[in-house]
Amino acid sequence: MEPNNDDNVSFTAAPVPGVSALPPPPMAPIPVVQHPPLARPPTFRPPQNGGARASDSDSESEDEHYVISEESRQVRERQEKAMQELLIKRRAAAIAVPTNDKSVRDRLRRLGDPITLFGEQEMERRARLAQLMARLDIGGQLDRLLQAYEEDAAPRDEVDEEELQYPFFTEGPRALREARIEIARFSIKRAAVRIQRAKRRRDDPDEDVEAETKWALKQAKGMVLDCSNFGDDRPLTGCSFSRDGKILATCSLSGVTKLWEMPQVTNTISVLKDHKERATDVVFSPVNDILATASADRTAKLWRTDGTLLKTFEGHLDRLARVAFHPSGRYLGTTSFDKTWRLWDVNTGAELLLQEGHSRSVYGIAFQQDGALAASSGLDSLARVWDLRTGRSILVFQGHIKPVLTVNFSPNGYHLASGGEDNQCRIWDLRMRKSLYIIPAHANLVSQVKYEPQEGYFLATASYDMKVNIWSGRDFSLVKSLAGHESKVASLDITADSSCIATVSHDRTIKLWTSSSNEEEEDDEGRETMDVDL
Image (cartoon, rainbow, N blue to C red; front, side, top):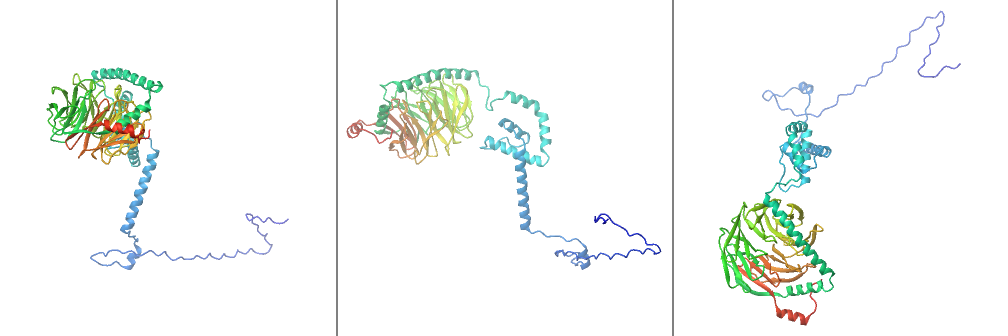
């Protein structure tokens, strides 16, 4: 049998009788290769013991040290910082952060961080909280801090989450509730009339909307300067027609408001003097012959046309900008640089509503003709639409890149025009909740925008470029440019029958623009169509 060749099995030869066994031969030792020690780079050591140099044997026995340059140290610090930021981002993405803005503010308050920063939006605030929680979590402090605060504030937080549904809700007075009910009733009737009229104009074959629009634009294109007169010794800031168009009111930086007899504005009916600072705006009531003025003395005042002071509205903490009557004539809206606009009861003089919502000063205000909605604009470049029946901000229009100074509702009820320091006039559609059209209106800021009050066939814009432009209400093309002022145009107004436009300027003049009958006849004879694409 052949032996097994497996390496793991060994065989020993059998001993031979009479022969002594010999010891196995010794194995040769395995050679060991001696490697020389690795050479280390030399390191400079400062002299010791008063400048004495260490011996060579001492330097070889001690550990060597590396010297890092300043540039290498900075590179290492940047790398460590970038790595730390990467870890924070990864941790922030994985950590659980509240999605409710109120919870985010509460968490920031508990962690000792500001609950909001200037101009910060909800998503930015939540991202800041995530970064803060990630840093504290990496440092091992997050659980301890949150546990300590939640133990103290748990009962209070549960009550807040149940009761506080809307972050800006505060309970108003009983008079405000009654006013909201009255506004709702008024607006329902006005809206029903408006909708019924729109349906009749659409369905009645005798109603030629196209012809009416062309006629209105033709009248607007024929606007020429009818008369001009100095209104005050100081620059004029506002103007307003009475409901019948027989009186024009103007105000100026002198704080004086004057009432002028139409149509030539040469005779002064009365002079209203009671404001201690410059007057910023004036407006007539839509239902009677009383008017309201706003001033930098933080007050608004109610007057009769004979100069009798009826009421003074006090409450704003900074100078007033604009003032507007509600279509019912029972309420007055004022805007101020204290970042609020307020609603007042005309009959009692009581403040019904103090409305916040803008992050900077509130400048423009307007009421929808139905009376259900109000629009405000401010230096925060926003235009907000408020539901007066509930008190909520239902729309926020963002698009202007500079402060918005003026807003005005179209008579159709669903278009809103706004103008500001970006030289633009924007048309917003309340139904689509977005910008409908952008008009590059002027070469300087737009100080006032107003729709033609009957059907909104055209709108007029005043500007600091010393011009007033008239735009088509259909396609927003330029119909007419009224040039004649020698300084900034501060305000304008349009009569109820759209036959006259009044403008006031810092050149201290009042100018009235009317449609020329001669130009109308020439237009009828010379051409049948306008240059406006309808």
